[in-house]
Length: 154
Ligand SMILES: [Zn+2]
Image (cartoon, rainbow, N blue to C red; front, side):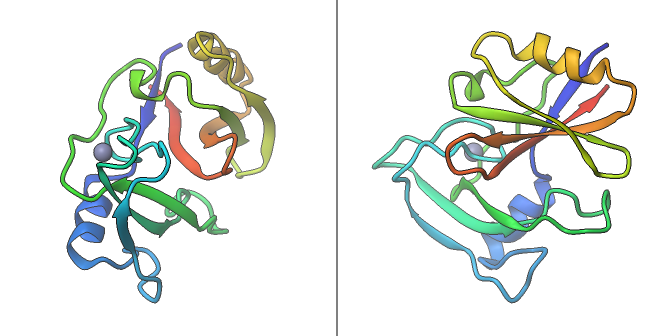
């Protein structure tokens, strides 16, 4: 069983950089400032260079088009264009960040929440997907709680 880690869409990243408002919540402005935290960027899935790189924060709903009940929350991307992550393995840029995996069933109910152990990401993701009822997972920052990326079976 293989899986894919999926960042926010190219369109969302492009739209927020251009308009500086949340593409999904047009009444909520975005902000750009020099990074005072590691992030990570939800587009390239790399950490920010604190004190030098600029990041844009905006409100994002990671379940738009998937679940009926939105889950809006703050996320960050690089303020300048960056290359969206694409790959068939766990993103190297995320390794070592304190994170949780949340496994949802097809109706969006949380089935399991597991803290990621550095170096055991593959095994933990495969083990959660071994539960047939699990439809998708979210990776969340263990410190701030914010959404980082979605994980789907591929
Ligand atoms: Zn980036």
